[in-house]
Amino acid sequence: GIQVEQSPPDLILQEGANSTLRCNFSDSVNNLQWFHQNPWGQLINLFYIPSGTKQNGRLSATTVATERYSLLYISSSQTTDSGVYFCAVVPYQTGANNLFFGTGTRLTVIP
Amino acid sequence: DGGITQSPKYLFRKEGQNVTLSCEQNLNHDAMYWYRQDPGQGLRLIYYSQIVNDFQKGDIAEGYSVSREKKESFPLTVTSAQKNPTAFYLCASKKFESSYNEQFFGPGTRLTVL
Image (tube, rainbow over all chains, first blue to last red; front, side, top):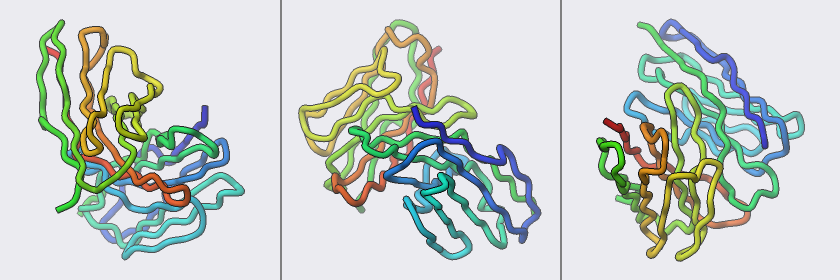
């Protein structure tokens, strides 16, 4: 099956710093989503981005589908950005349309 | 408010018991999914359903069962056959459109086997 690799696995930032999270995937995809899992476990949708670039406030994401990677940018980080960030993909031409998840990047923002 | 609800939030099960986790959505979504998350890991698919009265096994379906009698509801039963059921369970749903496939998740149920 498709492999989804995220890096780095752990990231510690000072409040106000910027960061880039990376997601590599091993096959063509129909869908790519970025999520933030908060300390209570809720998965919050950040971006639906099978290709191209999107921005939402301090966050932006870019997916280069032909090169099989996606990047999530966090600018001016805040303590509330802490948590685990997941990249998840739907492989091209799959019947279930279910998401395959990476193992996440755990972000800790310290004041 | 539209959304996905899961209940209970926490569930404790004794060895040998079956338990049922509830998932309801009022988003008029067609497809519903159950995922399992173990500590430090991503999510893995247990079962999915694209239409009422139809469902399919995912990657880790052994020891689980589901039903889809209504569009809004997709309950998951964790049976005594599931060898290691302690985990965080998340339900998701999405509209069935060919060009748009964003999935949305409920708040999850934490199951602990005593």
